[in-house]
Length: 279
Image (cartoon, rainbow, N blue to C red; front, side, top):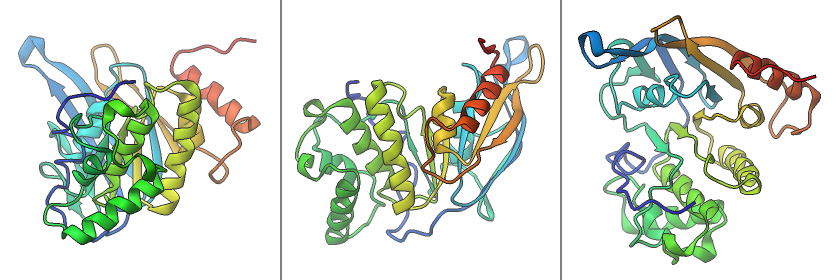
């Protein structure tokens, strides 16, 4: 995976840019009959149809569903990058109204600035007005946390895809978000790097707890990382998506990847996605 040259205008560098350096800790996310439609009249298309879900503070929830089922749209509603036509998103005790400073977002592409070093890309995530010394200490802390202290001076073209994604995660964590939204963050990585990044995410969550909402197409990834897995699907022909099922994943993290119960849940979720089991 190559680092994107796109300015990170909609990831963690704007979301929460005005928050101070304090870390308030994870907060719950409440989705209340969230609906979203794009287009007008005969050309309109309903993407979300009354999605409701309570996500506890500090919980990791994975959203799965077929392509076009509204997973990424739902992430945008949560952080205020888009507004629902109906319904409401509440973080903590305050509704989301516009880009919400309590959230940070990381995408499938790292969206690093190619002319900046790893250290400077992480620094972009700091809340505006962070004192220089405190900011330096925070960046050093995060680079150590993601195992990139020795790569601090490298630019995106000088690092691997996995390293670039670690920089992206460190940048998203720089503001100490209450809610971390991950949109297919490991989807473009090779299989081995992806497994390592999953373990890194769990390490980061243990070190700096936050509420995590993860969009993924990988059912095994969802079961390995999450406390619960929400399956999105259409409510009918021409209708938008709602939550078809919510699966609680047993056991404490980190889980054994070969656990028999996870294999059973994987088969159930794949069936829910329309993938029949093969005997």
